[in-house]
Image (cartoon, rainbow, N blue to C red; front, top):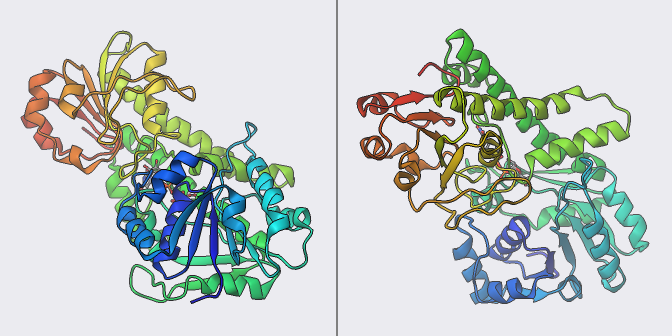
Length: 438
Ligand code: UGA
């Protein structure tokens, strides 16, 4: 076990998952957060987010005494050897990441760090941030290391324990190696030892953005192919299957849908475009990736409008799934809400259902209010169009006959291609899939 305590500053899904998993690996971890209520709840073992497998590991960490929670960054950082910054880096409004919180925390904890401490940026930060932090810190005895996270919401614990790779970037090779060592013993999902990639801080910072933007581009690509497939009479699943068999392409991240969303892809794709612009490097693919995503959302809206007969005003529409993907309760930048916004603008009457959303959604972040029903059938009651927007597995097992009873004559627009076309037809309803013939 590495010598020295770990501090994790910020307990969002990245900080909490990383801290909890590091404690599971045997490290002593203190997590600090600005929200005293949250700290109190986490200290009691309450998990503030919906993340598979986190509860068990958090309970284990607390009971073993290796995982504790404190109020404030200073308390967590004092006496720690490794300080992981897991802080929000939101879109500053111009596409650029807003680093104010990161710099504020560095200013706060910088003077009280022990000599030999290693400050680790885990939040997604623009190229040059490690250097900037080094300059702000103005301490020769503290190293700064970039160690980006590649956790997916909903499978974050699994991703942490079985990563494809661990990337650590710094000018200080010894500090980078020490951080890589914290992950000793991890294996990939196929049981192989994990590659520990040590790079410069700049490369490490860019690896994170490049990975997210590349995946977003792959999704935008397949979503555009879905649009083309619909027109030429091809099937996007067959196309994705055929493409994915090429080892160089791979089968993952080729599921067509209503566009990609969440707290990372939209923000990071725009932030990388802004970085390229700042350095005067033409990178049109990034803008095109975002534009194609908006087109995917438009295309789903078009299918819904057609299903409603051309005019959405006053049409009762059920939205199945509101989160940005299955396996999370996160609504940030959700494609489902993007589609809801477009439908609301055309004055459709919306009613939603999502297994993780228990209360009506108020208008928020530019998205409209959405009344939320207790189950998918209640949401569908009286609807003329039912739209499947998030790939929750329970929708694949839906009782279509029951849907036909509560919404006779409804059209089902399946934006995730989860439903069985024959079953829908047998129930007397019409199915509009995505990127293939109905
Ligand atoms: C993403 C990356 O996948 C992680 O590697 C990264 O660490 C994380 O961002 C981050 O930067 O923190 P996440 O935001 O949890 O993870 O979501 P994804 O699972 O990547 O899904 C993103 C969006 O793509 C969702 O809207 C999802 O529905 C959509 N998607 C994904 C598809 O439409 N089709 C697919 O085949 C896969």
